Image (cartoon, rainbow, N blue to C red; front, top):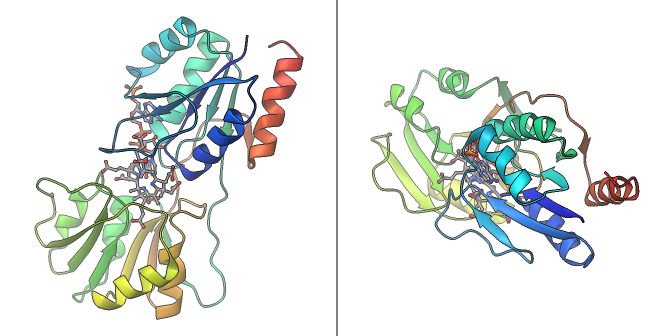
Length: 249
Ligand code: 3Y8
Ligand code: NAP
């Protein structure tokens, strides 16, 4: 009996959830970490919250008789992806990662690639800048080391206190538009953008806006993930499910 665990939290996971819902024969459950106050509704059953590490995920796979796992989490959700590889190997459950390609600079882009958050902080200029931190809430603290800059921070939910003293917060949920991001960056006289190389369409607007405004982008490379089977389209993932089901795995 097919019972699919879809590790979600991204635009692509939402597309897959609809494809699974349209295929009545495929029973599936969508999993959120519970990072946001009101996650987007999905057309298949949803569970929210961590599993309790690899052991907790193995227990979940067995208790729920999960037949396949699709890891459609964000490229920066490194720990979840590593846990999925380990748990599926231990439980003997087929796993496929739904990956979106990294963004590649085009004509007119002024991008500086950096390996991690610390390098992004180091890459900020010595003279005072007006920096759009479009990296969410979890990795703001390191930027407090550079208080000379003024920061614009975009978050999904209204924060309590921030680990960054001088920051103007915008609460907004993507996907975003280039027009909207141009207006936002103009209104805040942004000189630099810091972003994660997330790929996909949902967060791309700020890069197109930066190109239109001639701004520098500090782009954080995505973390390396363990080897696993991957697909780059909904069709390829559905093919994996169909093929695996045909083989009775
Ligand atoms: C909780 C689920 C959908 C999914 C939409 C995508 C697109 C819009 C763009 C900016 C960049 C950022 C951030 C971002 C985007 C999509 C996608 C994407 C970037 C939600 C969601 C959850 C999260 C978690 C949240 C993180 C944060 C990252 C904001 C829902 C809305 C910056 C990543 O406050 C927190 O703790 C938020 C944490 C992880 C990164 C961070 O470190 O703070 N996403 N984002 C998921 C869960 O609980 O499992 O609430 O509905 C999903 C989406 N956010 O279905 O349409 O697919 O990437 N999310 C980044 O890319 O840099 C915003 O502002 O320009
Ligand atoms: P992470 O650091 O890789 O994972 C930390 C822990 O959160 C995991 O070990 C797991 O807890 C739990 N977790 C993460 N994703 C989960 C999911 N989909 N379902 C159930 N538990 C999950 O994760 P993250 O980077 O904070 O991302 C959290 C969520 O936000 C994911 O759904 C991701 O797709 C989404 N998201 C992240 C980003 C980003 O920039 N990181 C951007 C957009 C969306 P246990 O160990 O207890 O199992």
